[in-house]
Image (cartoon, rainbow, N blue to C red; front, top):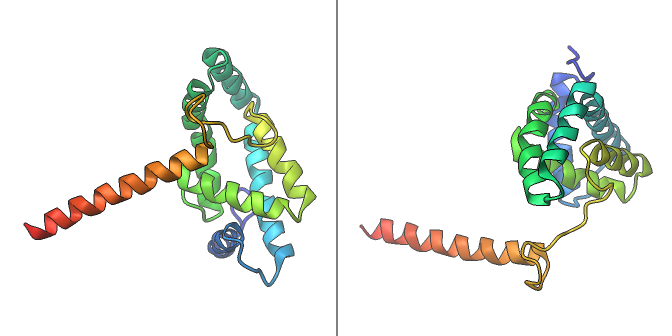
Length: 172
């Protein structure tokens, strides 16, 4: 039976797995099928983001943030999640940030081969009031290094700290 976004629930698990493979850069037997599935997901998001009420809320978030990118993202996240989660569920993706990360990674990988995915992904970002293409921004102005490098370093430090605590607990 088709869901409200035209996605059949029996194929949604397959789409999520395909998007994971695409996001990881693995070879796909049928890129065209993966592209169709991803485009269906992106079109469903486009319809939801285009809703006049949602657009009014996005505009209000941007006005409230007054140019402060961190505040804007913080305010926009729950608004976008409210609209994204039902669609992610319908397409077999995890809800929340996990689904967003998978969708973005798959779209970025597919966009290298698919102008349609690249265009639609850019349209979605614009509907959220963001730049068409994601621009990495440093976490700390003048801090040197990319934001990705900073996060990688922080993640490694955090992971090591957790490992030490787990080892301490095991010795108890």
